Image (tube, rainbow, N blue to C red; front, side, top):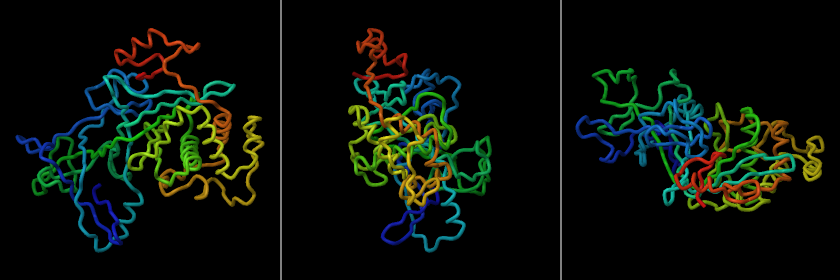
Length: 378
């Protein structure tokens, strides 16, 4: 993205322009043709069509949601060698960009193609899971985190050359005539990945609890399936400031093929939760899970870890969230202990006796959300 550095073979390269295909230009006005994305404020699903009536992923009403406008897909960029990196460059990179990740479930044969399940224990439902292969994962760059006006999104770009340009653009789109012609856009990159949406049941979790649970499950997945860091990534959705769910997607090329097992195998999520607790420097995990008593978890006296370390929940990939990670969070303890003794059951739009309701068939036929919020293909 604008001003970012790419390190290759021991050298640093600075991104200075985007490669823009001819199809994104408006021949008459000379401006770039941009779009808009409506993001569900309940689950973070993205919708690129006109304002939808309901979210395709969770069924929540979408009326009154303000879209992210001036969105332009960037597929390729050009760089130039950076002879030196100043202290200002390093500070800007450290502060970083405001990135929002959204998803869209795939449609096949005119229907949303997902597998839905729920993790239950003797006390009831713990989390709901939705999985899809080939989900569209989109990452929008809203601008620098330290920008003065948070309501102003995106960056200036010269539509003729694709060069990123600085300076202010006023609300009417006017600019200094001595400056290069520019237009404000919100860059987006998109790819298709295997993805799962994890929605905790009950009261909303705090930012600390959600961040801790997010990376506990991430690290648990890595341990159980022997994955390298970065093969599976997680994001809080709709955003870091108001998380209500966790989006998990397989970032490695071709996918690791593990997320589908969370919904298809009854005991896999339980193994992930147990591995997470052990990784968080606790002993007697099985005893605590069987008794459903967090007080039975025995801290490892040799851990030398307060709220998180790079041997448990911290990693290169979660640096922006590390201030919220707390391995001693009691809410996360309770969720992981319940998940440790849980069983994952496929919902598939069945009633309490496992029989499919004719109403569910009708909802799916017309691609409408079910009473539980799913729109699934069977």
